[in-house]
Image 1 (cartoon, rainbow, N blue to C red):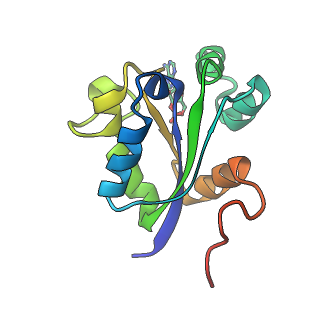
Image 2 (spheres, rainbow, N blue to C red):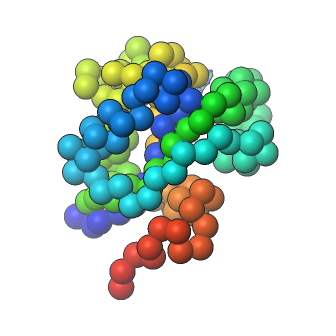
Length: 143
Ligand code: CMP
């Protein structure tokens, strides 16, 4: 199975609960390498750009307001089959429907405030990593 990279945001709710370290520790336990990680507060423009695909959704305004209300950690991750494996560890969008032991079950509150974001495909992982880590901030894939 191929080594892949994926992208995670530890959202404001999890940072407010002081669970950023717990999320990163869980990811390392599950075999992910943390390639890059930075704490930042998203501007409205950056949050709207990141979630542009959801622009027409009724919850878009609420989503942008939530994502800009406090600091987040943006994280680039690597392991074998990273996109699918991270989606398993992350759990369902709605924490109430997420499996036991997943990040969203452990630390999420509701469908809007669900602790973490994760890329849904390898293609989007590349786009999302370069959105927050431009240039060579994350070392290019070897070979
Ligand atoms: P995320 O993986 O960050 O991608 C888009 C986000 O939109 C999603 O997680 C949810 O947090 C959020 N979202 C999805 N559905 C709803 C909803 N019905 N109400 C509010 N936020 C939502």
